Image (cartoon, rainbow, N blue to C red; front, side):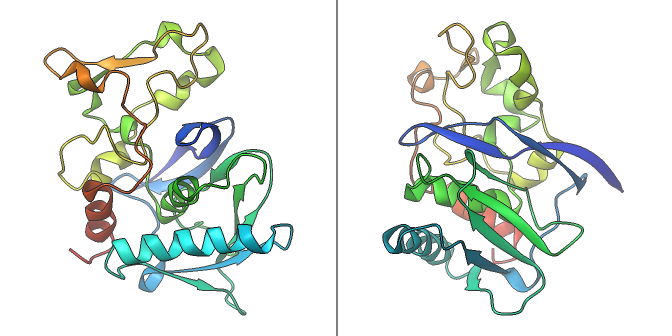
Length: 230
């Protein structure tokens, strides 16, 4: 059964590995998942606005994602393929979630002024592979408490639970260190935390959640599981 889901996919770097989203796209998604890339292959183009060093950073990041997933996912420069990701320097760091249901070109923005870090590139391409943010898992209340009163009103929807995220969790424990997790103060309207650890969960995560800047074992396993490599 297909449903229309509002998918938050746009991120603006506020530190070396903290993400905030400022845009959204409405995408059709399956309740149990998203549209995956056929043959585990993502074709891509990189806009010529990027410098040679920036282009190399993007390529190196994709190579790392391929290598760490045991070649489960391949990123291939586009030639004439009709369905592909075009990497552009627009406002912020953002991507659609999963392969576009309508096919054709789909944009992924890596703003040259704030998104050119390896963890950001990997984060956004994980969105393009179909992965949502960790804190949108339906079981997140067992691990975190969302303090909606401290969230900017226009961005409260960024913390909505996402049924697709349950499928994507692949049965793994909640991962505070995931490269797909928000920081504790993302979208804060008053400087106070927007998320704290739930009762019974170690407070060590209270200020470190969402600060991971590398793929965790959990991140890797989720990709491999969803794309049939585990």
